[in-house]
Image 1: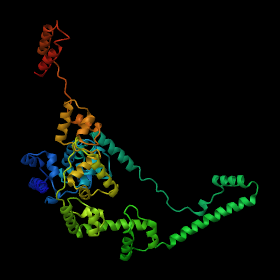
Image 2 (image 1 turned 180 degrees about the vertical axis):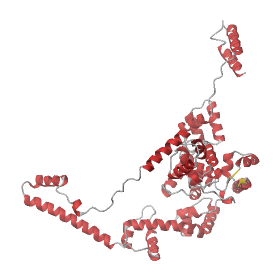
Image 3 (image 1 turned 90 degrees about the horizontal axis):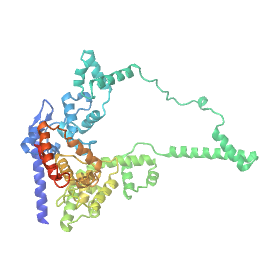
Image 4 (image 1 turned 120 degrees about the horizontal axis):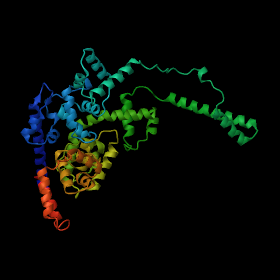
Length: 491
């Protein structure tokens, strides 16, 4: 066990050193004029694939400031063209990991890269683009030069059509404003509706021609409705709508503590506090968001020490015991723990893959981080006691996502060359990858073989071979003849 721990520590140390080396070379290759790194020089120095270099790049260790280009007009034509060429390496939509690689390559925020990528796949005319193009037209710039400055649309003609349509839309003026004033009593006054007539008919069918009973039934319904409205207004008037004080927040946290996080009785808690249910629920969510960073900073050392002590003694983890010793919930302990010695690796292998572990991780993520909450892979790693990077990659594979690096594509081409079907190739690469995605990536990567016409010399040689084997065709010597034809074709 000590040897395994030592090997894990050595492996993690090498990964950190390689990440620091990649980050250092990227900082040295930074070009202030272009605002991004020269990744070609980094790839040459390290003799590593570009995607692996981008994956090893650690932005927290870099001294290069990340660019912020929130508007499309802030992007230079060269940057946008480079982005379009780079994202072509990713088939389908970009995953979260793909967006991180694109951000590192362009040295731009992920959100800004996502905005520019959406403009690449779905070009559209915006107000900013229209104003920029209008300024170019006022200067007398031809459409072809404008297209070179704004390489968004597929062609110059498409650009002109989009500009003309948007100009016509702007010239037509804004739509008339819709009145949002409250209806007056005169406007809402109405006579007997169809619903009223149906209710009267139902009462007549029940009581017959006894109009006294019918009138009393209608009056009773109206009286009940008034009582319900009065009760609702009275209850709403008694709800405390004042600002939350620190004592109110502390009382809310105290009342929520005994409950399970997924089975909180908000009706009882709201009654004890004298506030609305939605107000209590919303305030508790705000307090949890404010409390997480404080807990991570204040209790990280205590949680890590308790985890290390338990792992050293038992070689296994009981997070309920850690939670009891530290005084935090199990999820907070999982998120705050920084001790990770002895964590196992989890690399996908179709022969040894276990769906029990995969279902266990998936269940933990769905239970503790339902959408749209972001997944904390530190907690997932501590729960599974597996490296965080492996948990993140395995979760992506389980979602059916795949980063098509050169190595993955080479393996797919190799397996396809062996005659393996797309569904079998998908099983070799990922547990939940579909055959359609493999087929799309394979066809996009491999170029179709162009037909080359036979020369006159080759045709003469084919005729000579056919004359030589004419008596034996098409039975015994047919395979050798086909081989000879293939050799002539290759030569």
